[in-house]
Length: 203
Image 1 (cartoon, rainbow, N blue to C red):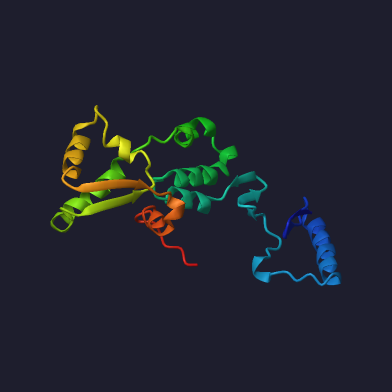
Image 2: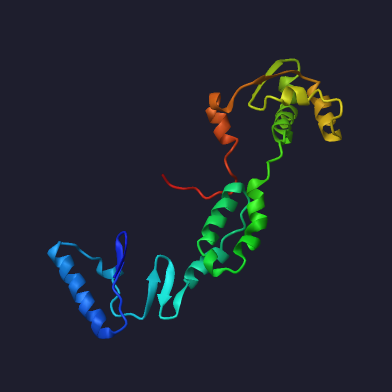
């Protein structure tokens, strides 16, 4: 008999011995008032799913239904999804030859430093000012951002052509950029980090 937290397996090498052991286990359950879920009970089977694996006289194999789930998953697009996928696939690493070698390209994605990109916050500022140009020209404009380097980036002498175009547009406005940590501006910080296309999870 093997016990795994709230699951247990009764097994032997013959039908008679298995029946005898099962009788003893069920008697112990009765004596201790332990109630079993009949729908989850399987008696006198030659194979079954145990801890996510198919166990039989052939040994331990992969549950094919779990593989179908993995192969139907969409391609990961963010770091968290890559990490989750590797953890899921890694559960079956003992059945996959050279798993570490196969998973290495994805594992490297988790260790690579993320390049800093300032184009997104700047493009948001440029879009807003250009969109409401007629209302904002001539007025004092204060932009609060958690990207502290924005002020200095706009003054870079070796800026790329796109950044130069943005700087020229921003110079038309009386613009001041002030630092404000995301923790101090939680509402806007959260909205700016919502993942597009992600499935809503009910709470």
